[in-house]
Amino acid sequence: MADMVKSDEPQTRSMMRKLLPVSGVILTLFLLLSAAGCQTDRTGRIVFLGPREGRYGNYIYSMNPDGSDRVKLTFWAHSSMPFHNVWSAGGKTLAYIDSDNETERRWLSVVDGNGQNRRRLLDITDLKMNSMALSPDGRTVVLSLDSTRLIKKPQGGTVHVEVAEDTDLFTVDVKTRKLNRLTDTPDVVETLPSYSPDGKQVSFVGKDADEIRSDIPDIYVMDADGGNRRRLVRHLEGEGFYQPELLWSPDSSKIIFIRYNLSISDSEHYTDIFVIDVKAGVLTNLTDSPYIFDGESSWSPDSRKIAFYSGNVTEGYHTLIKDIGSGNLTRLDQGVSSWTPDGKGLIFVNPLNVFELMIVDADGINPRTLAVSKDIRISMPFWLSE
Image 1 (cartoon, helix red, strand yellow):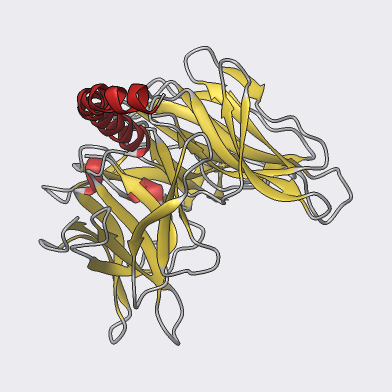
Image 2 (cartoon, one colour):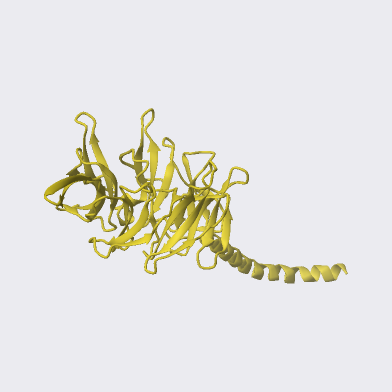
């Protein structure tokens, strides 16, 4: 028996020498495939808000996905103005309001995404501007301006003068600085414009200035030149917006918005997420969840899914990803802020360390550090693709 064991040893060692290289290759392939499964495209720029210590408002910052090349772009104090609307594609240009504290003058301005080449486009000191958006190509800014004026209306042998409370949409050419009127609708307040990602259309909300229900706006869309205006959604009494922004899908085919029911006598004002098929004009309630707060939504790059915050005080809050086509839901434990450009993951601020930006795979696994800002607290991060 001892001789048999001894005689097998050389053969065993020979087999092991043959198997070890193969097992090494298999292990290497496994590790490479595992790593590839969790990697995401690291191109583009991440923009976020950072506080002004001891002062009102925030600064807008831009950085590479790994946290390098951080640039402070400008002061931002417009909490009611949608943050994502003021960037051109890839974050190459930012539209903002430039203020002079000494003279109290204000200008509509733009700056390159690297913080260079600042240009003042329009003096808006004496203009009541409440919202704006930058076109994807960075060539045009659409803004909402107060254009209240006196209107003379003949009545018999006299002329009756009325005050038309009006807010219309205008455009400013970034190169020529020329201001053009885009809409002219007396007694209608038009605000919150937003370009479709392909730059061909502009969505906005409008409300009649003289109606009792004037605090309940409707949703409109028109061509970028102001033509083909049509109302997509007419809100009824007891309905309204929770989130003052319209989010276009990346393929420019749909718009999502958050709506709550004012008729519910509850301080929570439970909300649902609705999607509009822009071409068909069809409105669909995506969440339809009674006594649940649904909000803070974000489109996936392929326009097939949305990530949103959901829950209530009793059941707690979490992030859900909904496949619009199948209706399937994926639950994430993280409060995500933005998709990665390749759609493989989502980014969020570490709730235990507001200086750390993290990333998690779209299936909710493998949360990990993306970037760390040692001296600036990160808020509302948004990943801009190239």
